[in-house]
Amino acid sequence: MTRADIIFKDNIRKIMNEGVFSQQARPKYKDGTTANSKYITGSFAEYDLSKGEFPITTLRPIAIKSAIKEIFWIYQDQTSNLDVLRDKYRVNYWNDWEIGETGTIGERYGAIVKKHDIIRKLLKQLADNPWNRRNVISLWDYEAFERSEGLLPCAFQTMFDVRQVGDDIYLDATLTQRSNDMLVAHHINAMQYVALQMMIAKHFGWKVGKFFYFINNLHIYDNQFEQAEELLRREPTACQPRLMLNVPDGTDFFAIKPEDFELVDYDPVKPQLKFDLAI
Picture 1 (cartoon, rainbow, N blue to C red):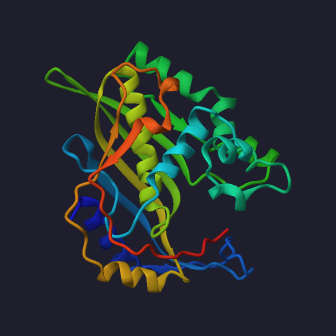
Picture 2: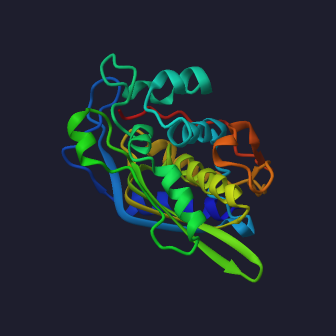
């Protein structure tokens, strides 16, 4: 059993036993009905990546490779164009959020990164002074939201800090989400931003340290309660999955590729569960 398995089950129990139902819910299921959810507020988890504590459950298969490709789309390609995500990475997850026939998800995510030149500024200030306390990625842009329709960013803020322990320098990261689908997106989002943390650490030749994960609204949709009970019944496997980034220390952030990542010792419980997404 991994630390992530323990946290996953604890969160499911807490939502099912202590959560409250959403009111005036925005999302809809594909059949047009309202996608209500049961939720808790203020969920926090801590993982020490340097000790092999990665935020990935073994209770069901998680599509880590596709998830990491989405990070490249946002932070390397810096675009919200769906053609790039589909044609370059063969990822179709965002198709349901296309705005009209624009071919984009609106001025969101990668478009905001490019608009503010966020990655280059972040890398520069870490290079100039690794100990500064202003290493923030914020995708919350009110002007962009007014100019363009689209889903507002869920994982909207990431912060980075450097620690030196002996001769080793560690990069820590904190991901903040306004909203998270516990059964579908929880471990996907966490592992995406662990991958981003690893890319930045490799750029400087640092080690990855701790990953902190705060979610304001953590929920399970009302068409997923059966799957939630099934996950609670499942026994985790004995594997201890780890994400590896197989490039030399000092590799430029923009030279890293999705295939440089490798998930090792991952043997999740099967079969996969089916989830109807709320759009």
